[in-house]
View 1: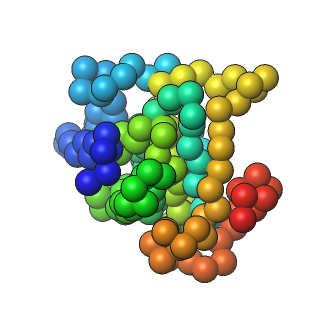
View 2: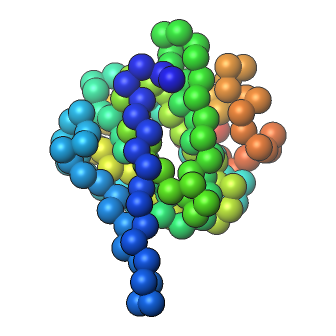
Length: 154
């Protein structure tokens, strides 16, 4: 497994009313999270690959649907992938020095718990193309929907 990457199984507690799932426990994480972002992505979207040079780490949780998470260790070239969400309730803690992103295998809701607050005046956001040869084979699509920023990284 990639250095610093943590896989945290999530437990769902269900009864006749519905269910409850603990998404984050600070004491289980290497660093405290400071901001949480929620995104909706349609099937076929890839967000990433992004990395952070100043040290922002991410805790990824897919709360509805299924996402394929891809992580690339930029130093060794080692890659990791896992489908998380409805059928595999797992959180992935990703040190920001590693390039990371996800593909929406279904329409989905995705949480990013991050260890640094976003600074629009000085963003710590860097890109690697989604189709980098070290990870291109890990995605399920060859023609994803990308943001302008992610498209420019290609």
